Image 1 (spheres, each protein chain N blue to C red):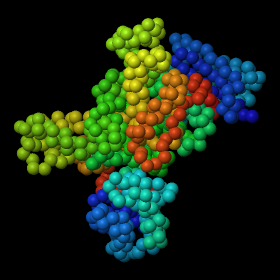
Image 2: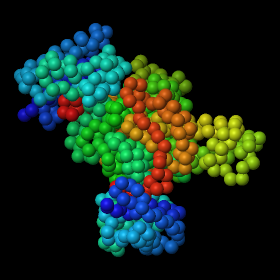
Image 3: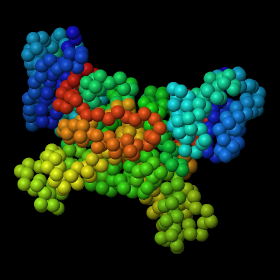
Image 4: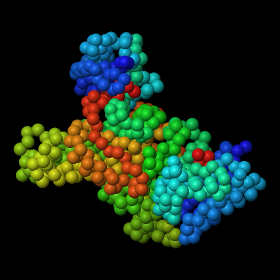
Length: 307
Length: 307
């Protein structure tokens, strides 16, 4: 059996796993990223965690095939350089070189959304020639896999599907434009929509909830709260309209929905699927298979390890 | 030298060309499609034109390598069947089988926008690993070429980039949704926008024009007509907003703009390019090369012949 190490380097936590060739995590450990301690400290922590997960399983780094690192930002797979990361102090840092020199292992780096998509692709045991994973989280992440390879453009900056317009001149987005899909269909957007609806409808049972998060409207809707139901009706439409765009462009064989919202599972996805199948530009051919992600937080580790 | 036959089967005309392996048209002929005469007549006319172009050049069909046919609709490359065509009486017709049996040549069929994109790809002598051609015509056509192969999804129905949302709940589209990009950025959309502007501003010099078409606003703007300039400012924004979406998703190495509007050339494209480079989600990596199509009407013939 061959062993691989996958690193999911996030703005909040560094999670590392020892993964076998079947995509199973054998040992896992995570610690806070502590951005303020800077780049060198992050690199040291990654190396320490890599050693730790090997030790937990009773092996050592030099017996692993390689280390894969998923990073939130734009990375150059050719040079191993992180070109830009909005959450981490890694701009123009050659992460591949630093890590591989210190542990004498082959290292690959890739974008974290790409890594997560690849993890879901492995987990789905998908033979799909085209596979897209859309993550509804703080923003909308996306990974595109065509013929078993991650597609992210000639410069590695592509697959920013969250930043396609849903409503031109709509809500301002951090990317410099207005009306991007993620301003309407991310988990954060749902939270905003829920809060606004509570303000407009103080009689909603949600007005009594202490914390409003991505689950609030789903919970209240199950109790037949009309405000919550209306929030969800609209939110599902936002999600599905964007997915129709994705399907019209790619007609992927398989589309997987991940991120916190996807934990609502099939009751949520079935409504999205119904909308997409009704409005996609395809009346005559087979339809894209649309399903829920299965790995959640482990997707990034497994994808980074095995890509 | 090897010879190929390319067929551009449109709702109005059938255009056929004899093409050499360098993508040069050696002989060309076109006749009206005469849809009302039905499928058999169209097939016979295609075969006749194939013979004719060979004869014009002094060769014969059996000395050609193959016949490629671009068709407006959804085609199955695997079976050779036209699954659906909104303009032609070819639903569920196996065009490949019919033509190849009658002339004993290898036949390939493909979507017409894909054929045109491939033609432009050949003409650009592009080594681009990702190449997208967007055609601003009656609608918006698109062809995606990744690693030298046309990408159109697992079912052949993809690359419908004209049918991604620009304005949710906007202008009604024939696809069943509202607010699709092509309702704002196609040549037809520009004509509508021009006509509406003239109604609102009867003092515009365009009010005196007999025929209003896609060129009208460009011509009047050159004469400093303020209404025309405002129409174009808005139209260019519509085109560019959609192209930012395309770039954010694909980050293609090269993006070519074709269709009637692209005859306005570099003065038009430079404004589009400026907008895209300002708003695309890429501050740190190389930018997509954006240029004007070069083949126009011949793109479909050349692409179909050589794919």
